[in-house]
Length: 292
Ligand code: SAM
Image 1 (cartoon, rainbow, N blue to C red):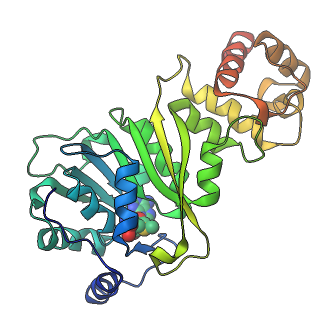
Image 2 (tube, rainbow, N blue to C red):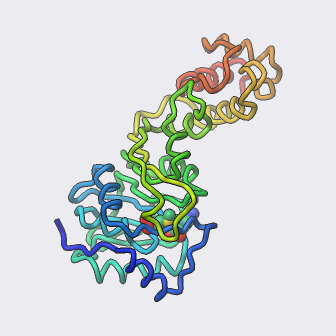
């Protein structure tokens, strides 16, 4: 294991003071000051020596250092210019192989694989893991954007608000199964991981967190945008049957019923019962029936 000095709660305060950082809610800035927690995330993600890891929102570097400690190469994307600028120095002072780390300052919602920062020790980077303590307000779009933009990602293991972790890992029939669950299922199998209490953060948020792990699965053979349009329509009016909720999408409830029957889906069900394969079948039947 490489020599690494993880951040403690007092390091977090000191670094924030030195950099003049006042954590903002808008950017979901809650920093972890607990070595046990960041090591738990790294081991839950299964990161081992020489893995190439993408980290979104490294902040002051708590999780970054734990990833480097495990022997990973880390390419980070941080939106806050002060944090992005300071991070290489923190890594250099606390880890003995800083050439395994690089950071780019941009918005993870605009992530493009050829714009990731390449650690000096590598010639190019093709991350297999996304590991992050995600900013709460953009967690779901950040995950979906990364899975779409970076095809080499095999595992996404992230800390998110507990409720979001539950939604992402929900299966059809669950009360919390919805748009994020179905869209993530297009890319991956999701499993909820351990709960993380709010006390490990500074500032302390008013919600608990949990890990969620996504293991990539083969993408269905269908047009993703068409399938996502069906998912959005099915959940826009959650309490209605599919015949009704897909009425606008199909042109009329009657047309929706025909498409649903052609797809082998019961029109009296609600969206919350459908698997990603059902949504794919509806999108395909819709394309045949509507021709557009
Ligand atoms: N990883 C650090 C830790 O565990 O202590 C910080 C986690 S904090 C919950 C979220 C981080 O994401 C902050 O550093 C914040 O500035 C950054 N961030 C927020 N929105 C972002 C975005 N759209 N793209 C990239 N980084 C973002």
